[in-house]
Length: 65
Image (cartoon, rainbow, N blue to C red; front, side):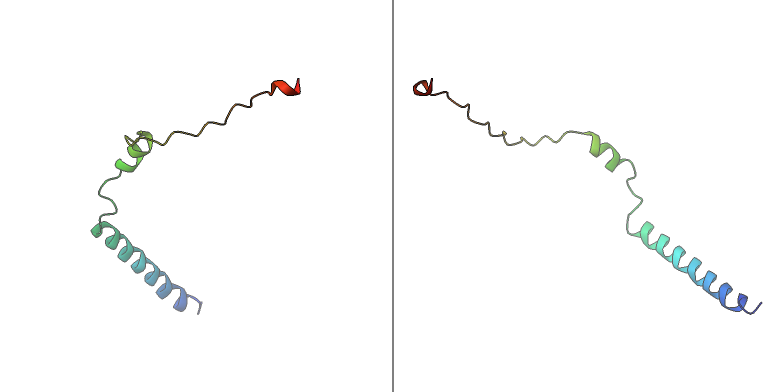
């Protein structure tokens, strides 16, 4: 029974930290745009990409035939 004297204040403190974290996140703009990042993943970038260097074709030497 004595453990309740410790667990109840710890639980209240934990809830207060969670509420403070939620208030901070909402004031700092964490929940402003929930759909933007999801759509941004699916869209292609308009920036041109650098061409991939091609490997040189191996030329067969006629002298080895």
